[in-house]
Image (tube, rainbow, N blue to C red; front, side, top):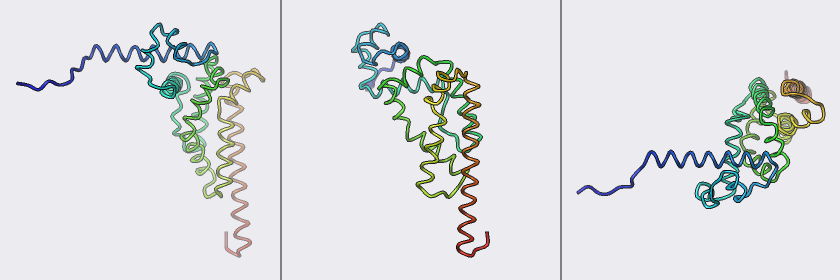
Length: 210
C-alpha cells in the first residue's frame, strides 16, 4: 500500500499565485490614492476578505516587501548591482524613467510611513552599491570619507531627488537624469582629484617617491 503524501494541485497553486498578485496590485492602488496601507484597505481594494490577505502575507513587513518587489520589477528595475560610475549612471537613468512611469505611486511612497519602511528594508543593498562605486572611483579612502561619499551618491541617486526636480523644476525623467548624472560625475571626479592630492601629500610628507 502506497503511503499517502501531500497532494500538490497545480490549479490550486495557480489560483493562490493569482490571488497574491491581486493583493499586491491592491497595495499599489491603495498607495496611489495616498491611503494608509492597512489590511482592511488592501482587502477592500482587492475585493477579498481581510483574512485572505493575512493568509498570503502574515505580517505588515511581508506586505511592504512584496510591494517594493513589485515596484522594482515593474517600474524602477533596480537590482543594486552597480559597481562603478558607468553602471551607476545607467541604473539611475533606468530608475528615473520608471519613477516617471509610476509617478503617483512613487510620490505617495515618498510621503508615507509605509514607503519609508519599504525604502529602509532595501538600505543595506543600496548602501553596499554606493560604497562599491566609491571604492571603484577612489579606492582606499579613509572609512569616514568613504561613508560620507557613499551617502552623497545616495542623495543624488534617489527618488527624493527625482521628485524635487520633477516638482520644483518641472523636469521630465531625461532632464532629471541629465542633472543627476552631472552631479554624480562631477562629484566622483572631484573625489578622485582629492584622493590624488592626499596620496601626493602623503608621499611628500614621508619622503617617498609618488
